[in-house]
Image (cartoon, rainbow, N blue to C red):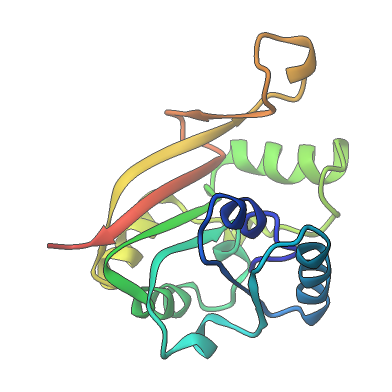
Length: 181
């Protein structure tokens, strides 16, 4: 779910060898065009995680995607099969709470219009304990778990960035997982 390459490009600029995949050929074409204009060498592919079965990766980033896939447990199993034995698996999603509905759907989609209406379905949001259990079934465990906090008035406050890490997992959260030892 790399979309237009919003994470791929900074990773490539930092020197990583990057493969970005997305099921949307339109998103991949946008990503390729932008990478070319930015003179970045990124391997973009249209497809799914299942199409990469012969490769191993040291780092896999699945950010804001699991709540959009039809079979999240299968998706995680496929991702874990691509992770090198000492690799790191980063995943972010929305928690299934009243607060995530208010902020992630009502505020983000309808009031602030940060993302298109209908982008999210609250029933697909994943509680951290559920995600931890699914990861455990794949042989992975969280090594770190943090929440995201959005500061809508960051330009007018002491927060210089719109997003900061938080100890609260009530809306968005991100985790790092590794294989069990």
